[in-house]
Image 1 (spheres, rainbow, N blue to C red):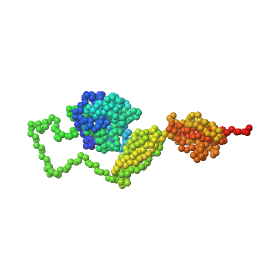
Image 2 (image 1 turned 90 degrees about the vertical axis):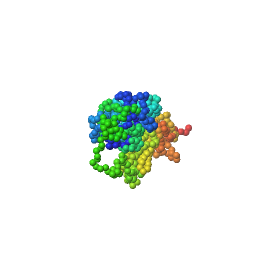
Image 3 (image 1 turned 135 degrees about the vertical axis):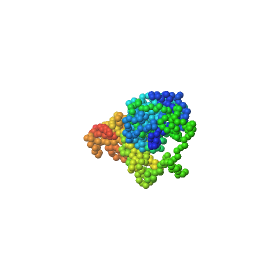
Length: 575
């Protein structure tokens, strides 16, 4: 299912699971080893939000069901930081080893490319718990791929979003409608945009927990979200699945996992036993208080006052007199408004600090980095300003890591530096745009061009005329430039004539070209190979004395020497 996270969970709720409204009871088909949801005919839409209420197509999973189990009230004790996990702990706080490794790896990868998002792996764990019960308790192979498919119901519009087949059944086996797939429940159309290769095997597989966790992290970090803030966390979770119940359920597990987790062997994770959002249960899920606590609940087994035959015992008088009306201290607000930032801490201008190299060969990395500094109206640097670097133009150009958009926070010096820029195989121009939003939208741009590979080989082609009588012309000399056997076009080429002894040409000796003014020259500038890698040497002329000369052609890292012979004209004698 798709979900988005808001800020870190309320600190005061760390030991209390936030209850989700009971929307559905878990059917028998959700026992261990069975599909995540019941068969299509078993789903009831009673009490469930409509696809419209869920927000369009239901986010990542197309409004498929999700588990509504809540964590136990007794949360684990957190031994320091989240990286220092206990070896043992409550069963519900155990996360299967491969699944846990996938969440942490996704957090680390995204921290290297989108540090400003501040994605916590515990958020991925919370979503994975609600979406698939941590890949059905960690039933994955050594590469992290689920041992059996985890599929949602057909998204046929019957209680779910209506999404007709987009993948010809490649991921979900359904050629009529799409279904949510894998540990993080991506629908194929969403996976086509957000799919990732998290385990480096060259494939993007929604059934692989490494790929799915990284894709979910990228989705949650979309745009300029900062998941360390409550607002952006909530927005992110709601974009995954636009449901308040979903948000509360995910937040409950997020809080729970932040209190501490531990690793358990794959296949031994605790499976959800409560209802899902599509199978109504007889009562709300157990594990946390109702979102609207009932006033003064009676102890178990004690009849309510209205039903008791005994008179109600008067309340004991308070030892202190009641304070006059209007003098009681008002309750603290549930949310403290965030003060408006001082102009000294808001970016009002942005300037370039360093740039990338103007050109790079296809497949290589550009020199330097695009970097900007943000300043306030007072001229001082602005820290923690989110700067979005995006690449436009040449589709083959990316930042290191394969992204075309990254968000980088400015440091204490106000500087944000983009990752290195890598050229693809496609030649042409592109731009790196840097944008920051302070008092107004700020933007600067960097330009670059990807050039062809430099040839590594030159060969003489055709049937050229390499011998000429002094005063006549050499014609038809053509060479082909290649890189690893493929033609290299539009690359600078340098032809020149050297003497038989390979010394620089001597004035007045050897073959020559003429320039536009009719002057003799023995080297040419501004020569390029054609698009097919071919270079045709312009016609040039033999000149005495008779002997052997060399036409040297240099293209990139390749050079070719072609031997030319000048023959003395025949001597005519009188008859």
